[in-house]
Length: 194
Image (cartoon, rainbow, N blue to C red):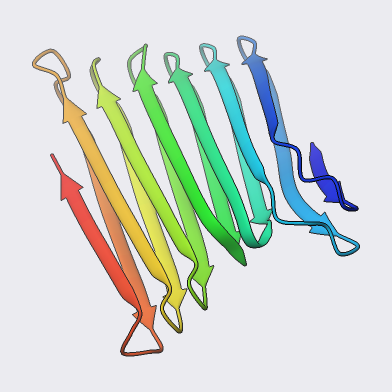
């Protein structure tokens, strides 16, 4: 799924993708957002709504290279069914302002989530990841790992929250966020929550 902006048109763009991975099915989705040919800075708002049914496997990879001055807002809402697996990776680089917001919920027991991301910021880039994982059923596993490199006055933000409901016995969750700052003016804010 390729989103490319080119030319002098800087009109805002908004898209919504609805993805259903049926019972026992497998899908790998590559999603790219880029600017080419001297495209002007612009605003984009992208929503992805996903259902991963019982026993299904879904791998979702997103690459965002929007260009300086560009605003990229993305929201992923994913529901993971019983014994299903959802793997996701986000790479964000060279985008003036990026916010990746993810809301993930387990709807069936014994499901697995493995989500990770990397961000590269320079100049005055601001890259923000907000993640909420809701464990609402038994025996589910979640892994979240985000890493970044920041230079200049760039700022990275990671806010991750794992919610474990009372009925979510045998939950196994792990979360980590790290950044390498190459400049004294770079900033990384991390707010893990349970």
